[in-house]
Structure formats: structure tokens, C-alpha cells
Length: 334
Length: 143
Image 1 (cartoon, helix red, strand yellow):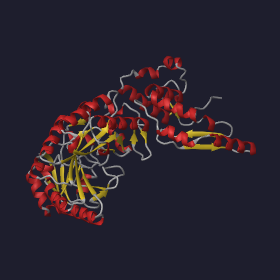
Image 2 (cartoon, one colour):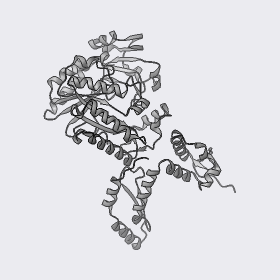
Image 3 (cartoon, chains in turn orange, cyan):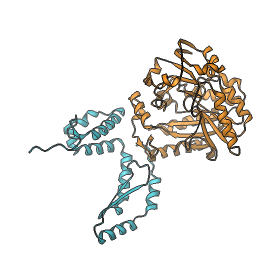
Image 4 (cartoon, one colour):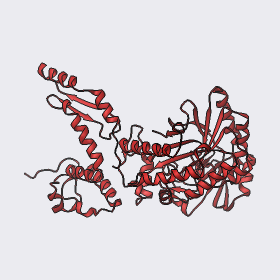
């Protein structure tokens, strides 16, 4: 992968993962730095510079490595949900992405202290030994898009193989299965794909693989025996939403089948207030903003509740109509 | 003596006075209209606005909202209608304008026992459970 400036934290040099990452990159400049935050956070780089400039940081994650997920984030209301942070930012450019406005830079950061992250997961899994404890990847970066470069998944796989009450979810829009090909399916690891109607994905999921490619990647994983999940998130209103959504659901039922999918979430487009402002600035012509957004009780900008519920319930009914068991469906962040 | 403009009013392209906040709301609504392919210049045309009896920024905001979000506007009307028993006399009741919750804000000014009795009567005549159920079952298929 071509990189403009590769920044390496001095502390990261001690980790073998750093050298592996460097060997897979082609950087015009390499700079050793003391602390990635001092460059990454202080620069205030415009989000859309990611179109022309790609900088990457190799760093050690400090502070919280594993965080509690928000309410209604994952499947299984009796389960515990955490997400872990292995990277910041993404190579895709989805118009609704909450990463715009979240960090002050669109530069990529790959963290290398996976043993410490896994250590925190191990403690949490042991503390809640009688519960299913989910660890979600993909909160701040697509979990597979750069996995051939970051190459950390095998370490996590070892942990999940020996910790049956810990469950892994890799959230992705990527079709990069290089690393997945080398791994064997685990009963407690799910690869979940974000899907939208093809027309909306083409408009709004800039640089991300087409929905047909994502379905093909799901099929390859299914054939290898991996557990799968689906996030219909974000649902974006259009007058023909139900018609297009039903076509997508029918295709999912035909190509993958609901038997091979552990859970499916439905979530309506929403933004933190700052992200809403930033996204509107970055994509002023986007049809996403041709609707009324109100500030919800959680301070997020959303469609009004009667429209959200209509979309979620329509989505659920269409899934059921095409054979999806109701207990596999949940509404995300609602 | 010349009449002073209302506090917060600013010069703008609109043919009526508007506070900065009203201007911001109108600008937002016009940007939604533009994204839907509407000709937004008419909303700055005095003849068009007069023909619709739009003479203030508040009228303009209401009209734009009704035009862009008719189903949502209809829901607000229904809520206002359902709150009739709780309005009048010493009581003013407001619902959550975001339609997110069934919360009510009730203001009452009690000067005497008559006001107090009237307040009690209005409260007792109102079925909150029915109101809450109606709010929770609100659904629209467009905004």
C-alpha cells in the first residue's frame, strides 16, 4: 500500500508487529516520533484530505484498550458487549461515517500492542465467566480492510479459541479475505457485513466494495464454515426504500440463506451532533440530508421516531417474509 | 418615533425580519428543499410569500416545514388536537416537538380557587395512558 508519510512511534519499534507492517508498506517518507497523539491529534487535518494524502501511524494504544459498547449495540441483550480498538480510521469514505468529525485527522493508525489488548479481554472474560462476553472489532476502523497489513487476527484467534465464553465480532464492509483464508472457523467468532441497498451503497459508501462483492465474500466465508452476521445499517430513507430493501433481502436469502447467519441488525442513519455538521459540510449534495433530522434524547441527530420505527418494522417484516427467524433480528441503537 | 426592530433581528435576503436563529432554520429548510430539486428562490419572493399569507419568519418556517415534511406536520397537528382537553383556562400544555417522547410540559398559573379547580378538572379529564399509547404507535412512511 502506498503511504505518503509513515510515522512510527519509538515505543512501537519494540513490537515485532511494527516491522511486519513496515515491510508491507511503500512509504515516501518515514518519521520516528515520540507519541502519535502529538502529530495525529494536533494537526486538525481536513477529513477529505484522505482522498489525496494517505499517512499512516504505527503506534502503541494507551489508555482504554477495551471499552464497554453502548446500549443495544450488539446481538443478545443478556450478553455483555465491549469493543476493542486495534486501529483508527478507514480506507473507505462512507458519507455517513462517524469517523468524520470524531478524530481531528483522517490518517490511519495501526496499533501494535495486541497482547495488551488481549490481556484486557482475558481479564473481562474471566471476570464474567458465566456470561457470553462479546468483543467487537470495527468500531474505529474496518476490521478486515487492512488486516493483511496489520496481520493481528491470528493472535486474537488464539485467544478466542481458548476462551469459549468470549465471542468475537469482526464488523466489515471489506472483501479482503487474505487473512481469513489462513484462519479456521471458530464457534465463537462471527464476521459481520454491513449491507445497504446496492443503489444507496453506490451513492453513499464511497470507495467501499459493491454490495454484490460483499455478498460474494460472505458466500466464500460461509463455504469455509465461518459464522456470519449482517448489519443493515445505516438504513437511509428513500420513497422506494421498502422495494429496494426487499430485493436485497431476497438476494441475501438466495445466496447466503438465513440458516448461515447468526443475527441481523437494523439501524436507521444517525449522527453525533458534531459528525452531522461535519458530514453535511463534506457531502452537502448528499441525498442523506434531504430529510428532517431531529436531536434525539441521546443527543444524536436522527429521523423522527415515527419514521424510524416505520423503517425498522418494515425491514423486520420483509426479513421475516423471506424466511428470517424473528429472534435473529435486532434493532441497533434504538 | 421610529420603531426599533425586535431584539435579535438582522438584515437578511428575506422580505421580512428574522432573527439569526430563524434565518439559520430557514436556511436549513431551504437546503433540504434544494436537495429535493425544488426552486428555492420563490421562498424569497414577496409576491409568492404574500399569496400564502406568509408575513413573518415564523410563518415561513411553518410553511416550509408543512411543505417539506407533510406527514410529520400532520402528526404534530394530531398531537395538538389530542391535547385540547389540557389546554385553556389557567393551563398551557406543550408536547415534545421532536416527537421522540410522549413527555408533556404543563404550565399553570393559579390566581384563585376557581383556577385551581379548573386545573384539577382538566387534569382529571385527560387520559395520559391513552396519550402515551397514541404517541408510541405513531408511524409515518415519509417525512
